[in-house]
Length: 232
Image 1 (tube, rainbow, N blue to C red):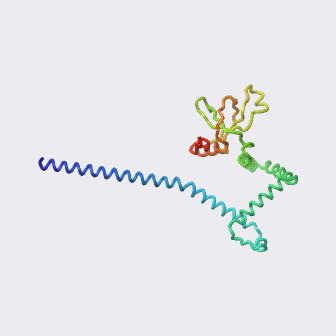
Image 2 (cartoon, one colour):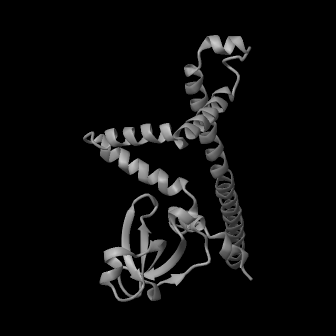
Image 3 (tube, rainbow, N blue to C red):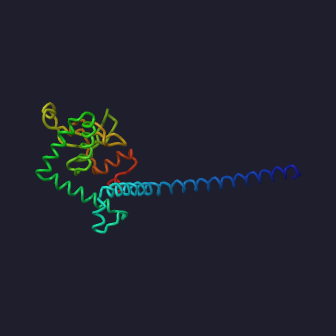
């Protein structure tokens, strides 16, 4: 074997070694990058949630504290800067307002205020929308939606998740021969908007997921897997 062949062989060996080292570093870099994004995926939701909750807590606490008379705080030796005082006062205020609204006089003023606000231009539209949203999502599941169903919409072969609100009654039920369900189809990722459709009960497939799991599934654009499916 002459010197030229030896040089070529040494050059090939060196190239193979460099390729192997480059592959090792690339694999190591890919692993580090994967670990980095996994760390973000694990910590980001928790960190952002606690950060937002902490800031909301401070904002509510400071806002309510400004409404408390200083004489009342000094009388009971409550420091204004004590964290949580505003939250406690807000909770007590909501309970008292709820107790007042449940009474006869409270219902009278509640209906009177509702009647006045509904006759104000622009404000009435915002008020009606917010009231419907809060009544829907703060009420019990039995009152808001009964169950989740799967149905073909807007055409055959395309499936969508809907929420059964009630059985169709009145004129709608009288005009249709089959038993029909009132189904709310939410939009993604904002389930507070959507549209109402009437579907024969025989054309829907009941789902095992709860209403809460269905809403999470819609809000997450199908990423959050329902707990019922995980258990199975």
